[in-house]
Image (tube, rainbow, N blue to C red; front, top):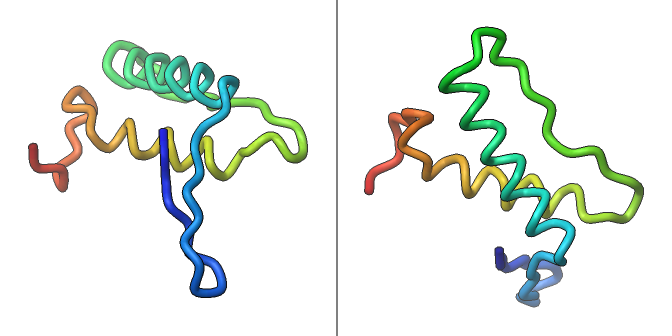
Length: 78
């Protein structure tokens, strides 16, 4: 749950806050459960307020989901 952002030729290290860490892990679990077992396959992700780190949370979530073999990502190589 760490990423690096480049802005104005400066690299900044950013890490998840506790609410992002737990929310992203739970969202990933629910996504995998819904996609692999659910017939409907519609999922909600996370409700956020202004300034809570929505963009970073989604980056962390996508990073986790891309590595899940259960989702059968054809572009991911282990």
